[in-house]
Image (cartoon, rainbow, N blue to C red; front, side, top):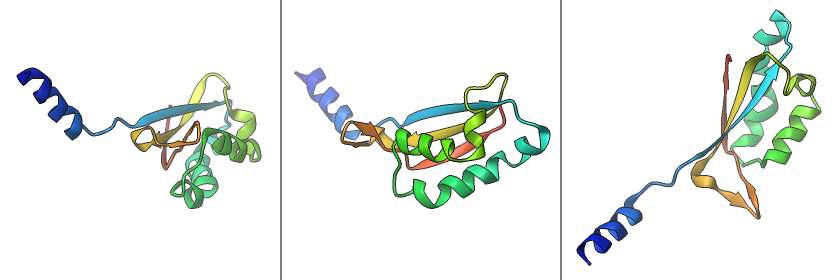
Length: 103
């Protein structure tokens, strides 16, 4: 009983784990690679705080020049999306922040 109560207390206090999704991009020219972070910002910054599903993010990317660089190898840049606490909208995860990585 003592262990069960301690575990219940731990579960109540534990912070939910965020979901992180990484989208890889490649086959960039040097000039394109330099504008990857600001392009992601232009496409996502105003919308992501309101929450976007993966389908919505992929639609935004597909409609931009970045769409042709998704899943290309070697991977040169990554768009990392974060869903705080595995937040859901229906059966879809909701991403509320992002960052770009140079690999």
